[in-house]
Image (cartoon, rainbow, N blue to C red):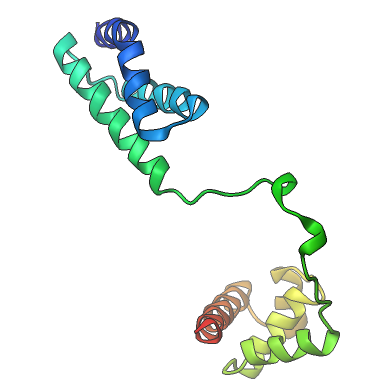
Length: 159
């Protein structure tokens, strides 16, 4: 009967819940989506025993979903961007090589070689292991370490 109490309470309170969501979100479609998410989240957990409990949980979960939606950064649709005003700078091949060189600093020779074979030649780990006369696990380990180092270098470049 958990779902029955929830469904009954949701249907009885739908208008109040919708008005509450509208007070937060100011958009009818967003409010309807928040209502749907609220019901689904509570229905999925199935932890509603009584109608008063259902009412309290419905309003609490709705409030939290609305707050999450307000905190989430808004994205613009591609059709809302004026593409005539965008300045597109072509990337030169030398720039790509320079950035890759900066990102791969600190890699060992074997890590650099494995990274190059994976990213530039598209080779599988098994083929690289055979080519370099290594185990597949050693290739994976070196590639993992190379990716970690590149990720760390990228974070340093961002600063």
